[in-house]
Length: 117
Image 1 (spheres, helix red, strand yellow):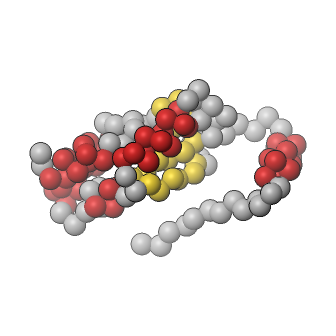
Image 2 (tube, one colour; image 1 turned 180 degrees about the vertical axis):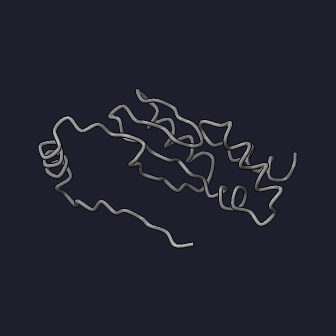
């Protein structure tokens, strides 16, 4: 499946870029329509990025979290590929159902659902 990966590359001018966009779009509110996805390898990384993003923010569902500045993030463990996107349709459906009930994605729970445990 083709993937679209937005890239924000500011080098050392990130503060200047942020000021420019704030001045250009005054009063603009961040929404779920724009989010950044963080692909992580293990549950410890899920915890690290989730905890940092949720600190002062809002925990969403299905791996989504809004940081204290209003930006939306999707914290996505690699296990999503092997569970929700796994080759066994019944296992993938169970993993998807499990994911729909989660806020923070729990790798062990996704794997257990996929395996039928």
